[in-house]
Length: 520
Image (cartoon, rainbow, N blue to C red; front, side, top):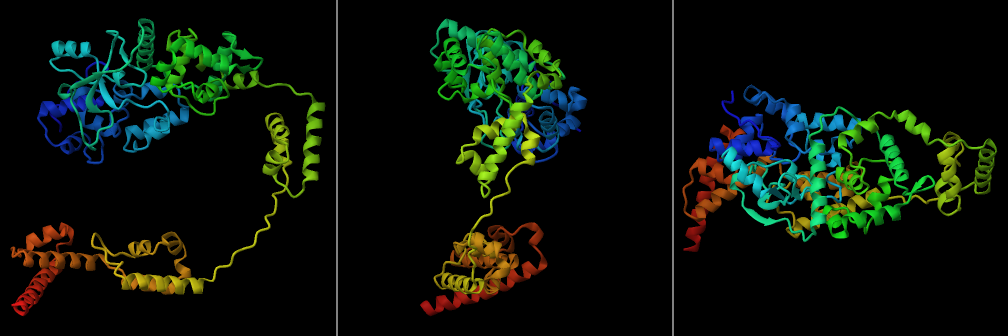
């Protein structure tokens, strides 16, 4: 049972707590840390979304009284993304992080593909650093300071400093305590006092967001409804659509281009802003939401905005956007679509939409009469293609000759690994074709298998090579030295292997002696 584990400080990352544990215990091996705390060497040092939290709870709960869920919600960056993910995605992410399946969480949350990048280095506030030294005797990594969009400490209203500690550690088990970090440079921003104040407000809003304790889940339809109403409220909508150009101009005037570029929300590509005010088909980064809310002065507490969207039933959102279409109009559109199908009987939907010029008609029916459209699509166009027939017998002879030529040329001697069947096939230059059609290439495959090296044969070759090298260098032929240099794992160090080594020692020693005598 673990005898000691630090109690986390306010807003401290779990990564930071483990780093302090390493320092306090004087542990040199980072691998030992993960074995102690998680009982497995498969746990990596992750700053933002650490995994295996149930294992950590089992090891440390008697010392900290902190559950796995509390580690996730209070000491990771997950809460910043939580309220903008769909319910099923949220549940999936939480279960993955609690268990040991967190390797692709960054992809599922959307961090990996986002234009908004995480910081390259871990960051500190100089004033917080000094205060923590006085209060606790040691500084620590704040989770707020590591979030994208936080460039200013909201408590001290000063720019953060980048350190020499990487946000994505180079080593799998690398835990870097804050007290060992060096302040490299202040975040380089040449801004006016007014612009800096806006970044302070943004940091305060992000701080509020990660400290919310709400059990809510907002659907894509609810977010769509919110942004349509937001555009109408500020007169940035043209009939039923948001005026994206006016919105972009407003954001540029409020934030300035350099700040938006630094945040990763460049307006040179306004796609993120356009999609935010259109029908939501995916989740958006928390920074997209907060930047727009703040610029439109709609930044009433995040809890109020999120709770307000939660109160709108998804059914009501859908109903509010339904438009009643005249039956006569539907009849005309259906007739036009049937006429198009009759005119171009050999063409499919794709041709009608792209080349035939019926994309607008198809889109209208898709939006307003989708069930009927799905039942009245043209028959799939028949493809008039000539099948290319492969003479596999001839192909088998060609491949066999090619492999034999490679053998004669000495290209099939693998000095860096085992000469396996797969390795030989790769040397042919036709790896995929041969792998997928082994049953059609019997002669080639038989020759390759006869030529390939079994694991036992490969171990024998390594042992021979080591013994021969030791003899040439006039070094000791101790069995343990040979096993170590040949890289023979313990489970393969059988009596048979030992006998084989002794046999090879005698054989190769005699051969070497004979060669030396002939030379003299």
